[in-house]
Figure (cartoon, rainbow, N blue to C red):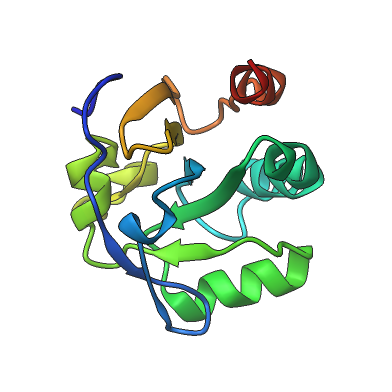
Length: 154
């Protein structure tokens, strides 16, 4: 489990256009890593749309948002297009990043053998260290978006 103060695990994940995005390429800015269980589900749609709606406030805090799910790049791309999401939605189809961050959700939705991402948010600071984290107790729970903006504004 990644904790506050730990160096954030790096990753190489594909965006919706199948370009590789790494965690390290965002060094020097704050990064909001928003792990979500599944594209095209109600709470995930709400969460990603709220992040989209607060994107300017987050950008004003020198922060970028990266959504991460285990869905394919194709599914994430269609989800982003359908919902007007402009920040990258990254595909962790190998589940390496959800495991590295300690947010793998095994047997998701009662499907034995299917591992998804637990809904979680990590803020990685300009030095590449985890400075804030929140992990949902259940996939239906959403983060406190105002708290994320307030933390980055402080």
